[in-house]
Image 1: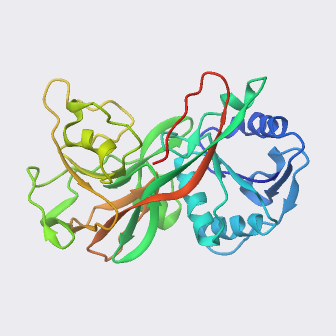
Image 2: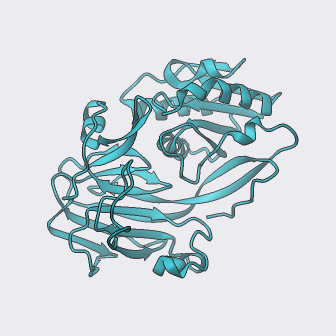
Image 3: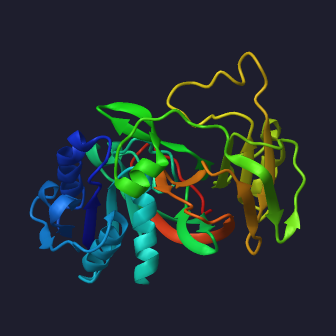
Length: 332
């Protein structure tokens, strides 16, 4: 087996990279490893073949170019070590390359909650193991009619995103990071909906109860995530239908490092809308402050008024290491 490995330059838990690299080499003993020079983690994989990183462009373009160079050596699997943000970019890089090899995500980021990234404890376990493959869907996000990225965990319309600063999880400015590469702590602004705010599904305006949401989350439903859970409302229908895309309008800012007050002493309200393959969700009339965060990666709208969402099933094949005590997950 030939394995290409990519480490996140900005992961929240870089202190673990050496142990993760050694564990990968031990678990896949006999495999041929490729790793990229520069900030992409060559030094963490003992005996890995050096691949020159692509130095061109900004972070995303350099990452996609580096993935392309790694895959040109005939890798059978791509491993990304970081959080959901790197996993999302790695999946995008695979799709752009035309290579649909399995993707193994190893958790070492600020948030590791998406379907690609899994913990690295199984790498440290001794004894037999197997590789479990599954196909997962995603939300395609287009800003101003142009493809931006795929959300395997969620796309959030907000002004801030979660990041790590000196070991602490903070709200960080989307614009400061996306436009200037700056890590700037900032309080989230709930005023993301303008006076002409609207949501359309396949060109038809959809009425809603929350007129001015404070945060908007669009996410794919994982297999059986809401099975039999009537308390989740309309989301409990997702295991029985192809409607695996979810739009959630929140009346308060819930994505933040500290616990939200809403929902404990007062009700926290949410409007849900389901959509499936072939449907197109369009959100328009956002305020000037609103930006888009896709699997933890910041994107600015610039002058674009519309943000579109489409659910695409079985987009990427993922793999994870399974040892005793790790249950099987179904395809999404």
